[in-house]
Length: 453
Image (cartoon, rainbow, N blue to C red; front, side, top):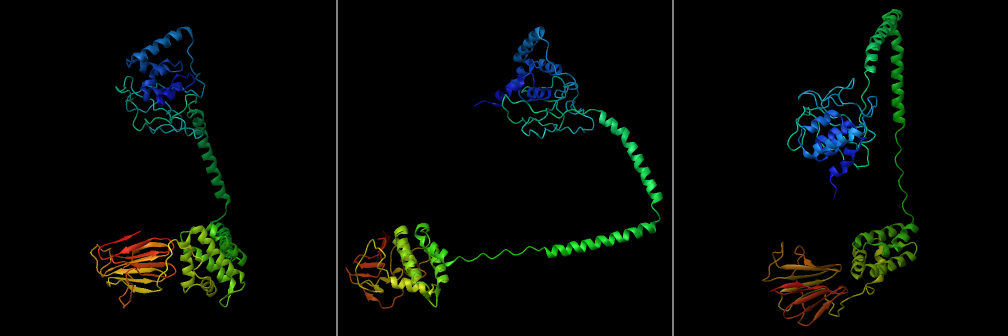
């Protein structure tokens, strides 16, 4: 990767480079001093300072420069060229004095700061902080004579082919002279005009009388503006029109393809919006809307799976907030359309207990089982036995906030199975095994251990 010195080498050797930039390169980039010394555009004071450093490469460059100068007239910017202002004794001032380069413009205060770069090229190098006693270089090449406040930060990296930005041109002293002559004349003319105005202006009473109508007019204008502002209050934004039934039907029909398959409740809101707009007295205004809901549920089973469709179906069928027509459609549809991965045929029991009385279970929209006595570590929050629950769209998880109560449930004998439309449990001598028929996922429960599958 090329270094910044490689990038600036072309500028250091370019005879078109201005003096300030050559000064900055010699001060901040020691490796470029031989190129600056050999550059025919370098001014004499900088050459003398470089010659005092005792650097063999610089001395060789100076020798080559003298050889070239013997046969060729050195190129030096004309004194009238504003792009190459001649530095005033660039390195010949004493420490503590203001640097002469870039600080002798008329009307410019010497603050010790770098001259501002032209706004046309914010990427140009800053004006070089020239001015230090001859021979005041550190051993590492840093410049020790710059006045306090001068920046030594490197300029932005530029391509060697890029020309340095133009520095602020030195202003002529003529404007200051003209200003010094004209300012007193202008002040005198203004004072004369003021005196004449006071002589012809009339008495103070006349001025007061003339000001009164103006003040009254201003008050009237201010009142008028206040009335206009109050009259121009912004109108409230119009309330968006609710979607039409046709738009809602289109949204329901597109649900199987557009559902995230992550939230049955969100899909239920789409169906609820349709029911709110197209039902009356608990019935669909158009019977085809009920058919559309059923087709959407089966479509969601194909695109999102049985668990997602079953969870939405149960929300519609069991929630008290479901519109009557929508709940009736779910009830009429039944659950036979829901596909089961691990179906089971068993006793139609809603609640039962293992033969040893240690495991209690309930089968409903969710499956819950409670282990009363156990030797395994109980989950957090479980103090009187451990209760687990399985939902149609969720795997087994602790649910000790809703323990299965002891109510003299029917015993599910060893080898027997109890089931409903979504869940099933089989009683074994070693454990009670329960699972979700839609997914096949379940849990084994016993006094010594429990594990999911």
